[in-house]
Every structure is written in C-alpha cells, then in structure tokens.
Image (cartoon, rainbow, N blue to C red):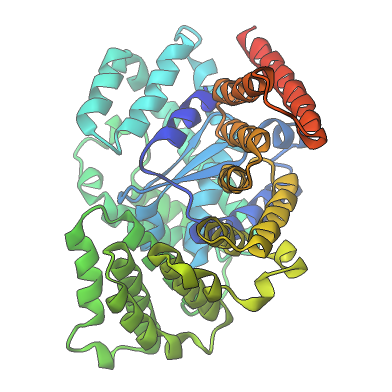
Length: 463
C-alpha cells in the first residue's frame, strides 16, 4: 500500500527534491533513526524491511504525514514556519513513532471487518485533504466514513502514544524537548479554526492544547536556555517559503521585503534571510540583474558563518546554471574538478552534473560521471542522481548505460514496471543490430540480469 501511494507522490507535479533542503532535513532525520534504534523502538527487522524515506512537496500547508512501509511526507509549509531544528525534529520523531509503533497495522487489525481497500481509501483521503477538501470528503464518504468514525478513539490513543514515544526519540537524539511544545504552538496557530471546534470528540487527533499540556509535564526540569537562531535553519525556512510560492505575487513579496524602508534597522540575521529569499525569488522570476544585486548585498552578511558561506556560494552557482552561457563552467570552484569531486556533498555534486550537461568540457563531464557513479553505488535509491547520470551518459553517446540509469531512477521511485520498460528498450536496441563494443556487451548482460531481477520481484508482489 505504501509503495503504491508513494509511486503516485513521486509523479505528483508538487513533489520536490531540492538537494539543499533534502540534505538539511536528512541532517535531522538520520540522528532520529539512530536514536530509535538505540532505544529499541526500531528493530533490525523493521529497519531492513521499511524504506525510511522522506518526500517533500510544494504545499504551503503546515503538515507532515506517515505512510505504510516507512514513507514520510513533509510539506514545505511546515519547513517554512520552523525556527529551530528542534521543532522540525519533533514533527519527524512524532511521525517516525507512528511507523515504529505500527499504528497503521494496528488500525487495520482493530477493524478486521474492514477490507484493506477501505483503509487505503482512508489514507488517500487524508492525503487528498491537503489538495482539495471536497475530494477528501468524497473519498472518505465513498469508503464508508462511518467505519472511519468508529476508529476515532483508537486514533486519539495512537496520537498520544506517538507524542510520548517521539519525545523520547527526540531527547535520545540530543534535541531540545521544548521543540515539541513550540512546534505544537505553531500547529495550533495554523489550524486554530479546527481547534475552536465545539465537538472535539469527533476529531481523530486530541486537541492541540491537550497535547501541549501533556508534553509540558514530560519535559526535563532544567533551566537550560533556548539556543539562539541558527543561520542555516533560517535560510532553509526561507528557501522553503520561496520554493513553495506558486505565483508571481508571492515571489515579488519576497523582493519587497528586502527593499523595505526599515530594512537597515533589522538585525543581521533577519537581513541575511530576507536578502537570500529576495535573490532566490529574483532567480525564479528570471531577473538575473536583480538576483546579482541581492547576492551582492547578502555576501558580507554571511561571511562569518561557514554554513552561510556555503549556501551563498550554491545560490550563485544555481543562478549560473539557470542563466547558462559558455562561461558557465568558469563558475565552478577549481577544486571541484579532478579527484576532489569524488568527495563532494550531494547539492554540489548535482549542481556540477547540471553544469556538465550544459558545457562541452570533456574533463568536467568525465569528473561528473566518475563522481556520480561512486555516489549511486553508495546511494542506489537516489533517483535524481540516476537521472543526472543518465543525461551525461546520453551526451557521451553511451545509450545502453543511459537507459539502464533511467531504469534505476524508476526503481528508486518505486515503479518497477517503468524500470522494466526502460530495460526492455535497451534490449530492443541490442537486438536491433546496433554494433556493440566490448563494454556494450557487458552492459547488455547487466541489463538482462537486472530485468530478470525486477520481473521476479514483480511476480512475488503479485503473489
């Protein structure tokens, strides 16, 4: 069920794999997984069987959700409102606990009379609510909403359990437990109309005020001061706000903020964040002159912060990629070419691959290919890396390898049928009489083996 839903999410136009935001979220997510394993919440068997993958979507609502099979959804709207890593960690640890405690499986077991498709429709209805309340209502009514209503009390208990277990994971991972309380305050503000309902017993979640009070009593009684805002977190929130904007007006508002009359009186952190948002908005509006002007004002404000300098440099490189031109390759740092590229982090690696696709420098393409090949060996389910690898293989005239890379990208997106289609296309090319080099013959053998593996996996799923 989780694979089927996630396959649709990957196809959704709002799905987003932004390398910088993905890296930032993973920096919080991975310690939570380690903590859950250390506490015994996440067994080795469950750790190996489930995906533990986070998908982000360009949705401005403040929301996150868990799906069967260890998949998690994170809306950019939630990333946009967090001000500390502890707050984001609280949401992720809560959703993680839903899966480690097998809440969806328990929900199905509680109502053995309900067919699995009813539960599936309920899950899809919850997802549809972020897009269209009318669609969600139709799905729930069509799948026996009365049956869903009978689960309300049990669902409340699961939410409370996820709060308690999530707080334990959060503290084990070294985050501040007060992030749970401040995040719930923000969730309460985002859904205050629902929380003002006169019929709380009709809700599947406990009232946010109740959950805040419960978590406050569970906090360690310490006088440790709250950590000050961190520039990287503030930049990540601003990036999420800009990338979630679907219209021109919202992007123009980001620029107007940086041009406000009282801008000079703001503190340096607020100025840096506003200028970053304005520069990114100008890039999305295809106004390179304005983007350069905002980056020029931003540069002195981030030089004192290592993460800030990195985000600034990547912002400039993103602008260079979007503008294109023959001088694009000159925008790459010199130490990105050669063996040093093998140690690049994911955002830098994917940007280098994008530059390599737009230039005809043989040394740059060779470096990008080597670096991407090493990366997908370590991270075989990175669909974006496989896509970049496929594009570079295509430019090199290595058609069989390009088709195989396209297939692996579909495997990463949980779509084995589409992957088999790409592998079949590669085999058709071999059968078509194209002259094959020794390397092509090896690739053809690998492709045949991989196709058989995927077909066998599909047959097992059908059983």
